[in-house]
Image 1 (cartoon, rainbow, N blue to C red):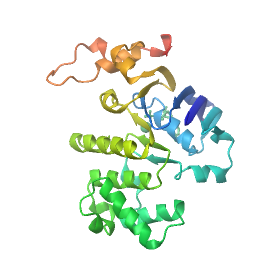
Image 2: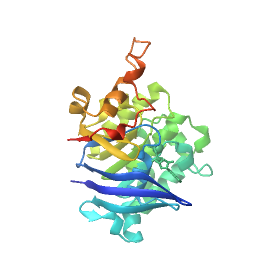
Image 3: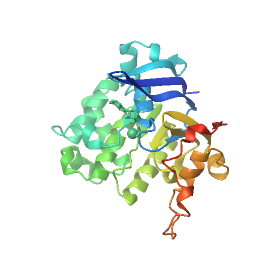
Image 4: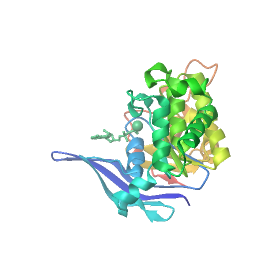
Length: 286
Ligand code: ADP
Ligand code: MG
């Protein structure tokens, strides 16, 4: 197993109050596979991925659990080991690419920096060729020209492509994508998803894909982890989850996917109901 998250608890402290944002979460990611975490806004998806990346900051604390990457517990690793894992073996694409691209540097410069850091044996010329190759691979039009552009000159879809190129140039074993397509329009969304699975096939990268949209999950997931208020309520292969959802929350989420051609949802009761505490039902972890 490439990554095993076991009984992860991550809390946020505010005065007297403790918010268990991630509460006893366990799941694993096999090498080369795509695992999706799905759940509504606030269910703890991003905090789970930031915990894996070692990027939880105060008032947040990873309280307990294990995060085994290639058998080594990242929670017990030194800062130095964590830095070498982050970027080189695990990389992450964030929801809003503008916040992770530096507006003051060109696209090429930023990609070059990543290579310098993680593939220091390459010459300047080799790095340039690798950057152009990566931009081509992610379907960027006119890669040589885009190399010298600043991020604000690119469209949202192109910026997200740069982020993917950046995440993929280090050839990570695991790519964490936190709602990478949420800010994009539907056509670009589909292109980005297609691109990620193409890269996965070529490089054998495992993907942890985070989304609030079960509709997106259907097309890409091998395994699905359903989160609700910090808890995993159901875990199954994509096939099982869609053909035989067991937890009432999963069923509600599935019923909230709009069906093409159908304007109205089936009924209010079959979508997620804010007045129901879905934690009252037994978990259906398979
Ligand atoms: P999502 O599933 O939408 O990605 P998050 O993982 O971002 O949800 O958030 C999970 C919970 O953690 C929420 O209750 C949120 O309020 C809390 N949380 C997230 N970030 C912080 C923070 N920086 N400070 C305090 N609470 C936070
Ligand atoms: Mg989030």
